[in-house]
Image 1 (cartoon, rainbow, N blue to C red):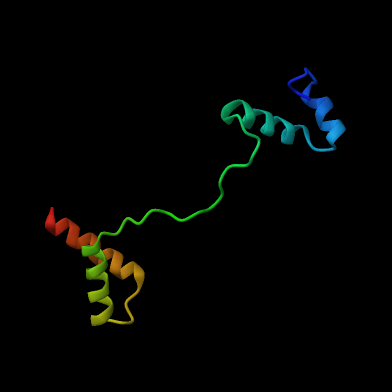
Image 2 (image 1 turned 60 degrees about the vertical axis):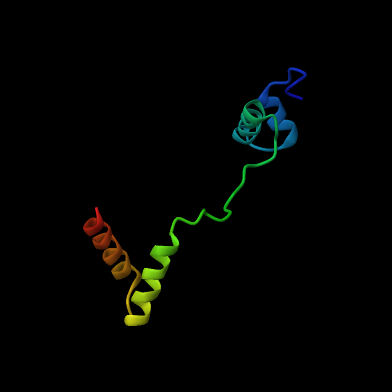
Amino acid sequence: MAASGVRPCVISRQLRVSHGCVSKILNRYQETGSIRPGVIGGSKPKVATPEVEARIEDMKKMNPGIFSWEIREKLIKLLKLMA
């Protein structure tokens, strides 16, 4: 409809959706060439090295009740000592 010159407000009335919805879809189409929604979620890349993972395992073995924030603080201190 938009390609044939129909204004977004007319499209929104005919499809019974908000003007914002039509605008978002048209903008997405202009930017990507697709009207499909973007990817939501997914897994994040791993950032811990095998050495860091080994240190975390050692900390958990030595103190099973240790909190994650304590592990984080200890790892940060180790990094500062190594730098």
